[in-house]
Image (tube, rainbow, N blue to C red; front, side, top):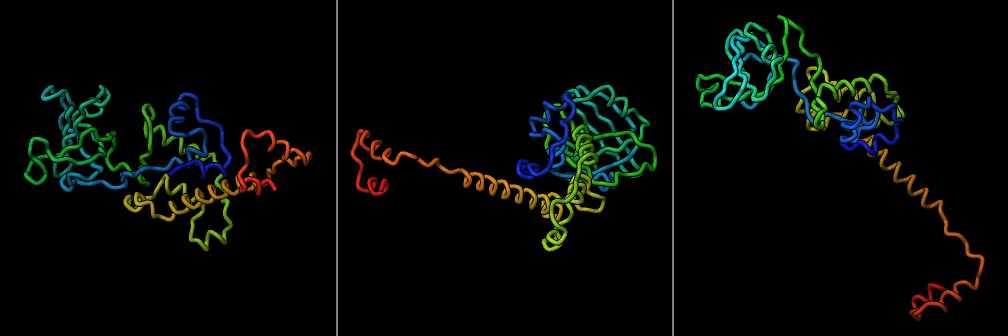
Length: 281
């Protein structure tokens, strides 16, 4: 969604810290109003765990288990490979670019959660042939047994180099806390158009509660999306109307010398056509 029209009617707050300002500027973000309307591209569901045995290649899943082994392999290219087991199956976590901190996180015996796209084993094994499944560069973190799951879908935002999703989420969450989200539409109009409150729509889009299907939000036909679209279209139309009114208020100056048109015509290096003469008269 574009932000220019929608943000024009809402006051801009102070710009984010200088350290991130240049990166945010590449995304067209200059303050809180822009952060609020920097809406997710898609969502990831980390509100429920999937047993490894039920993980399906081609789908994203959140798994939890214990690391049984972790090693750096040099062939066919340097990579970090760890195997995670839950009660019934195993999954490989593969990293072609990694850091010592990741090796420490994936030390044998560690309990972790990993989120990513499930793939079949690249050597020909896979879920359907008795082999293992894997995730390549999943998002991994250490957990304790029975650690609570996330209560909202995880938004994935348009971003730029040097600006992580976690950093962008923190900035947007800060804007949500600071901003005045008072509604600009009369309640009667919102009810007639079946539109949610502006604050409710924004908070839902940035933090969809568990139970909302990511596909419904991705299709952008949810009432929260309709409210944002309505505000953006309304702001655009108001802006166009103001520009039109400003143009109408400007008039050409009245010429006080009534003989000026005749003298101007006489100095022209060409002869006016009959149609042009009618216009002057």
